[in-house]
Length: 398
Image 1 (spheres, one colour):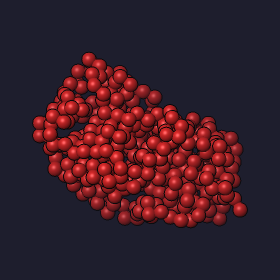
Image 2 (cartoon, one colour):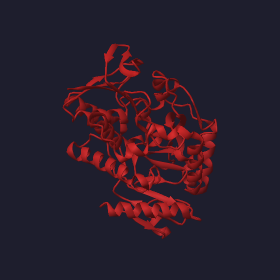
Image 3 (cartoon, rainbow, N blue to C red):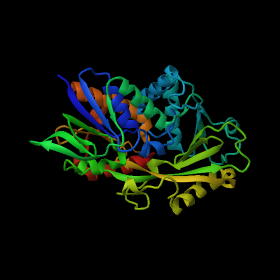
Image 4 (tube, rainbow, N blue to C red):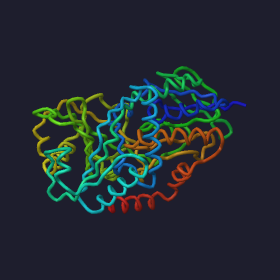
């Protein structure tokens, strides 16, 4: 007997779920995307995939590794399908706790069959980026094997393959309501009509608070700002530019320019300039950055990379991330039967999407709950104050 599954959201997470569901013959899957595949938050993603950064804790190393192998496997099978640029990553360690984390990442990377080193020799670090200010820097991790992807391209590749596997793709289809019968989800109402469903998976990212309200749930999700500047160096890029990671910001090449963004783990969910509950539909395509963000970047660059302050601004934009209070996604079932969540990946959606897709598809179709879903359920927020306190303590340590 087939199971009718609706996936709401055609971003990187929703497209991954649809792709993995397409491998189950008994799954009757429809993906609903109110705009175009890979738009929204996915289109405003740096899509960096670094084996030695701190974006995902080492507890979730297998999530990072599976995602990287999955994307590079797609690229090997179909060159150009992911937009992969192998730039390598330089992760700079300015203090001891961060150095320890980076060294562990190097060990995990090497043990997984990839190349990585930790350098305390400043000359080696300058061999990658000659004009960094390394005063007070303890060292840096270097991995030449990774780089960044094109998240919109990946989402479209996954949706194309999902469609080939029988998934129905409904673009420009806005879900206006999730309908219920006898306390259980029974379908969705859209601008193109009603669809009967057995299970709905919410992969709407920053829109998940609204979608969850259709079934009477209030999600512990806040919006944070992914504020980005595209810098045009005065003398151009005179050397191959890697992904550059510091604890508080990161940068990567953007054609001949530099894409630079604040690290999402630096966000304070209690600071209204960093976080709030906003309407993602009101985001402009470009512009909209806050004065505080440029001041933040100016301070960071003045200290560690003053040459970049000679750049002009080629473009700027803001995207919203959906952040739970512990900065980890909410996955799996909820108190509402038939309504499942794959939301709250924050700035790590590209990294986590393949594992989320694989594990959500298996859970929906077989009932088997992976350790990852078991670790990150909606129910963990029963004591919200405790979660917030533990997260703050963890962030201070890192």
